[in-house]
Image (cartoon, rainbow, N blue to C red; front, side):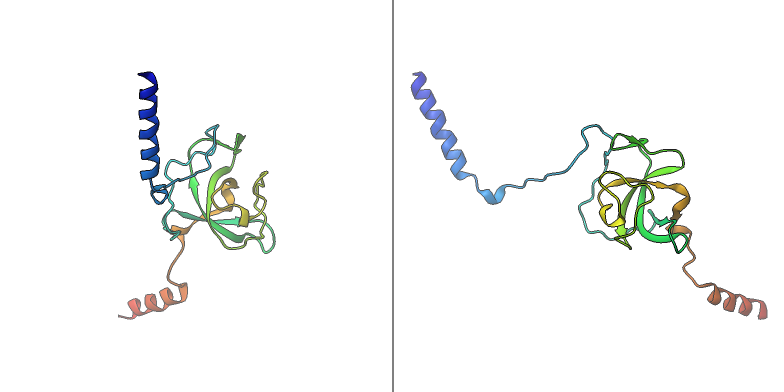
Amino acid sequence: MRVDLLKELRQEMQENNTSHSKEEDHIILRRVSTGGSNFVPEFDDGDESDDDNDLHELFIDTPPPHRLVAKGKIHDFGDKIHHQTVGLGNVRVEVVKVLEANAPVPIPSGEVQTAGQAPKNFIAWPRRLLKDVKTQVSTPLVHIQKYWSCVWIH
């Protein structure tokens, strides 16, 4: 009886395996931190259209002064990146758009030395070298002055 049961189970398993199509397999692999220092609460695999409301410009100190090298998002969860403390005056940044791939990052790590290596990684960045994209004036000052004088004339 036991032999018959084993034969039936094997036959059923073989039928299930043959009816399973490889096209139905959807395997998603993600690199995750086992120590929780590189945790991403929301992972977006969609297109990389930047929502400028959340972005910050990332600058470096090398000549010319305060050179813009990338845009990124600040993540305020935890004070560690890959088991290393972010440090005072620094923030955890996710680079989402690289403008100068060969530019050195201000605080290099074992994995990231240049801005081109930074996307999809968290890196520490000095807060003093960040600028919120929302605070930029979208209309050139010349146009504002021109219309301002028109307002005073009327």
